[in-house]
Length: 87
Image 1: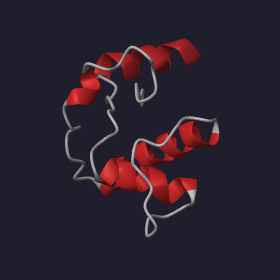
Image 2: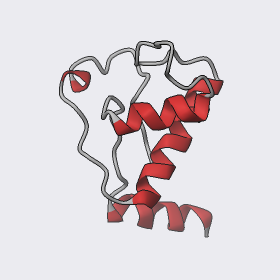
Image 3: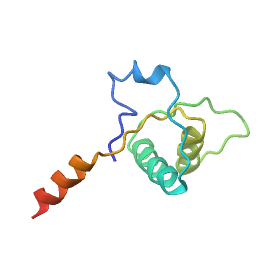
Image 4: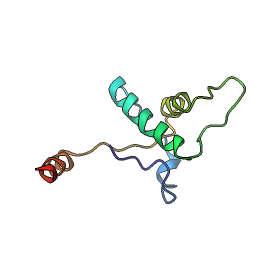
């Protein structure tokens, strides 16, 4: 799954909230990718108040829950290209 959450030129996409995630599996996948970005030094997109979580995984989940993280899903063509590249 490709995520453009921290690219410097993604300001246009950041103005609208992301599509709500209804699949818990997709939620976990997007939050895990975001937590990885946070561990590598990305800045949180939410203001931290006294009652917000401090673990990066919790911060990532809250960012996904509040729809501030943009994500894209691979197309069938992307998946097929990936399979062919491994063979």
